[in-house]
Image 1 (cartoon, rainbow, N blue to C red):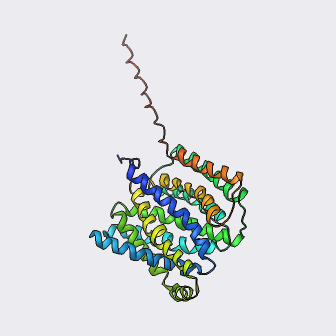
Image 2 (cartoon, rainbow, N blue to C red):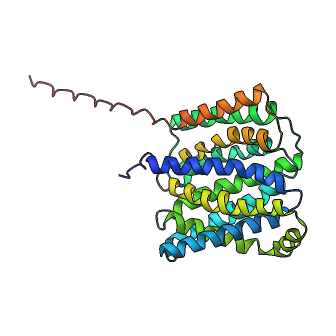
Image 3 (cartoon, one colour):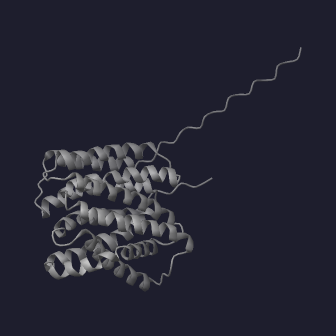
Length: 309
């Protein structure tokens, strides 16, 4: 009988809190840099900075190469999440406002739960499904009904590609964490994605030469914190819970994005957007509840043997 993953401990909860805050800030930083960096060059710059930081930490901690069994999941996470997700997200944010970007990416946790329940055998706990539904309604309210920005169909399609890449990558990453540490998985997935994005190297050099220093520093920020640190803390938390339940936690991000976009981008949220953010948080809280245990079904009493006459 397989033992179900335990609930996240205090360190895991702290780790995912760090991840959510840094990923929310990434939406804002990307919006700030998209005017001066092409989608592929921004992703490559972010991955190179993150890969160097993670590689240095890996060496300092004395962790070597992951086991062979971990590599399929690492390759999947590197290509689909660190690679496809980042390029499509950067590209999509050129055609959408930050709130709508967070909204479309919001289908990712639903896909993670569906894939995790099927591929990883995590099942479909009722609180998780209910929480996902509540949070997704919240993202619709916050990102569409309460948004002040504008978006194109092309931008929405790109963000859908990003959401699918994210879901596949998370499930692949979860499968590798049983064979390698969170730092190993994060480091080598980041390096795999950097290699995949090398065709954008010439574009990156050109963008760095022409972009203002502050914009280039925002790409460095994306590499050091929302990539290196946040993906590492995410992997640490993922190793301690199910992919579906942790994916539902990312619905905290749209609520944070609305607030950060207000502060840094001047995208002022209205009362409807704030209500949507509150629904996102409520859905996350519901999804974290344990599934109710079913009472054992009493076995039917055996019929007494008929008495012989």
